[in-house]
Length: 325
Image 1 (cartoon, rainbow, N blue to C red):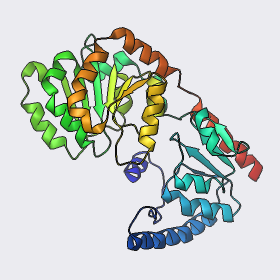
Image 2: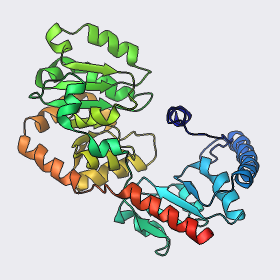
Image 3: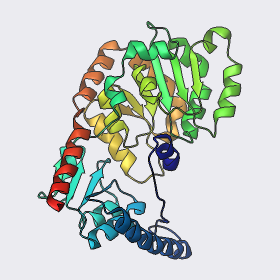
Image 4: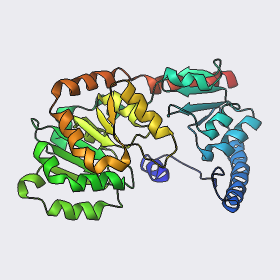
């Protein structure tokens, strides 16, 4: 997916082999260790040729060979951690890093004070400039009807899609829906859409995936239903978007941590994946019918926004470049 996004942005790229080693079968871990070794050799050669002033990484095993190669070549490494808690790779690589940027003060505790910078979560400018009225115009939505945006990821979230499908008619009775189903369930949800009455079909916007229009799909909404990936920590505050979060139960603890953070700040409610079919419709109804509660959640989530986050990270990279010259 990342390769597709980089190509769409028109950026040059070079790929290196990498693989995880934690929690895998011994033979798989051994094979991936070989990939990381080859990736390290390739990263060293790329860095010698490209000669960067700074290496910027955001975590995961794919960053390990690059960060190690940069450290050995005395190139400053800057880490940005999007999640609230670091995984094993970031914990390890932070020892090699010159600076570590984090989204919120709660994350400072995991790193040495002399390295950490609370930058906020950087988002695309489109999220900061998105307008609700223009967004609803884009999707041909009624400006007076409550709007719900539902999404999972590039492949979708099957349990969320099934929950939406199970209650689609009563859901569309109370709101209009932008549903980004992901590619895996797109055909099934398209069939479900075709079976709706003309009135309800007019309230349902179905997409397999959105690229440039994703900020508008969120800006159009009064409420979102989605997983609790790191992007919710930056994009929802930028838009003032309340949410019903359904942490992916097999993604380790970070989605639970992200969801709990937003819930603790009064910006979201959390629903367990296992109970979503039964709880989705009541949760949406309770929030959309309680305008005062929804407005309060909007205010709370906006308090978490750091619109200058990207500029702060860029400035820190420029500072490291000057130190390297």
